[in-house]
Structure formats: C-alpha cells, structure tokens
Length: 264
Ligand SMILES: Nc1ncnc2c1ncn2[C@@H]1O[C@H](COP(=O)(O)OP(=O)(O)OP(=O)(O)O)[C@@H](O)[C@H]1O
Ligand SMILES: [Mg+2]
Image 1 (cartoon, rainbow, N blue to C red):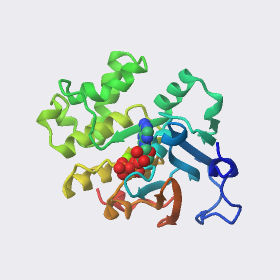
Image 2 (image 1 turned 90 degrees about the vertical axis):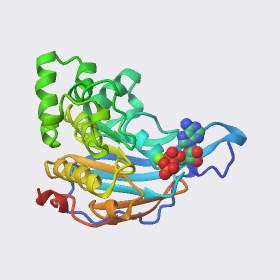
Image 3 (image 1 turned 135 degrees about the vertical axis):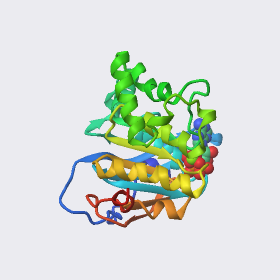
Image 4 (image 1 turned 120 degrees about the horizontal axis):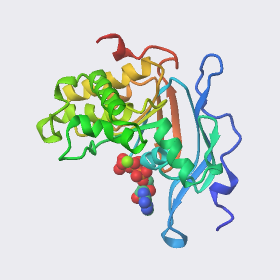
C-alpha cells in the first residue's frame, strides 16, 4: 500500500458540506471515511475513496453521478450487501464491523427494503407470491404472509393484480410490485438503485408517488438516479464523482412532506 493512500489519510479537516437541518435527529446512516477497493495491487479499483455521509431518519436523498462514480457500491454498503474496505459505517446505531454474516443478513432483512432498476421479480410467480417472498425467508406463517402482502400490494395500488404474473403487468406495475416487496417487511430504510431507469414518464411518476408516500410516513428513502427530474423531487441531492462526494445540496427540510405525496 502506498504512503499516499487517501483511505489511510482520510478527508481533509476543512468544514464538510453538511447541509443545514433542524434539530438533531436520529441518524439512520452514518458513513465516516468509507473506502471500497475491488481487487489488489495493479488491478485495484478504488470505487469509493473516503465517503462521509450522514442521513437522518425521514430524509429523502437522491444520489447522482456519472457511470462508475461509485453509486451502486455505496448503496451496497449502506444496504449491508457489502462491507467497506476501510472506514466506519453505522446503520441505525449499529456499527456493521461488529456484525458477523448472519447478523448482517438479519439487519438487512429487518431494516432495509431494496428496489432495483430491473425489478428482479420471479417470472413464473404471481405478484402476490413475489411480495410474500421476503416474509417466507423471515419465517412468517402463511396466513400472515398473505395478509401483509395483500396490504403492501394495496399500498402501491395493485390489489387487483395480485394473481398476475410479471409478464402480465406493465413495467410500472412490475416496479410497483417490487416496491411492495421492499415494503412488506416494514423497513425503516428504502434503497433504490435507478428504480425508474426502465420506466416511461407516467410509470416513473407512479413509482415516485409510492416512494413519496413512504417517506411521508417517516421512512427514509435513498435513491440513485441519472434523471434530474427524479432527483429534483427528493429533499436532498448528493453527487458522487470518482468515489468521492462532490456536492451535497438540500432542497427541502428532512421533515417536509415530499412534494408528490400531497397529490394522491
Ligand atoms: N465487483 C466489482 N469488482 C471490481 N470492480 C467493481 C465491482 N463493482 C464495481 N466495480 C467498479 O467500481 C467502480 C464503481 O462502480 P459502481 O457500480 O459503484 O458505479 P455506479 O456509479 O453505480 O455506475 P452506473 O451509473 O454505471 O451504475 C467502477 O469503476 C466499477 O467498474
Ligand atoms: Mg450503478
């Protein structure tokens, strides 16, 4: 490791771009000097080069940045799908370095709901069963699974499509099924990696409406997007470049009602 390794030195101590917020709130995400390096020696890729990021409960954050800037890597770390190479990450008050694989899986299942660009629904499985899946993994009984999945499908406006297969649904509807699946375990944190990347503007508006209602209910939402229109509806925009935070812009207070949630 070279002496100039930025991961060891950490960021400069100049005042960081901490956006103004109201009174101190619970920190759901707290990253300090987080680096992620894939591979070693001459093939090493420095995907994250010392990221400091605090996200408070109830915030709605859009992460933007060029392809390869480290957005998905950051999201995988926040969602406990991966661990930092160096630095500190505290999720919901728990330092993830203290957790073993099993505990990481447990915190992930309990606290985080994931939504991906490609929906990731099981093709030969109904909307209802897709949404029940995380509960099946969590060992929830069949009647309770059915009840909670039905409620989650209702919350995304798809109660009448429960018995449809993904191929019988539009892209926007499939993504709303994926959002219902993310919500069914009642997570405090929703992480979405380009959730509207494959959707037209109408379907994008539907999916964002669901996120905004979730946020209005107090859930924290972190969403990666390339689309300025999508980012503009968040409360805060964090821009990454080459594995570092370039800017951190607050658009609305953490406890504001998101713009889309008022128009149902
Ligand atoms: N598993 C991996 N092994 C090696 N390198 C990786 C791995 N995952 C990501 N990288 C590299 O890390 C860097 C950041 O990748 P990341 O997927 O986080 O970018 P991104 O900002 O999400 O890009 P995009 O907008 O294209 O999705 C890239 O240079 C990428 O090639
Ligand atoms: Mg990505």
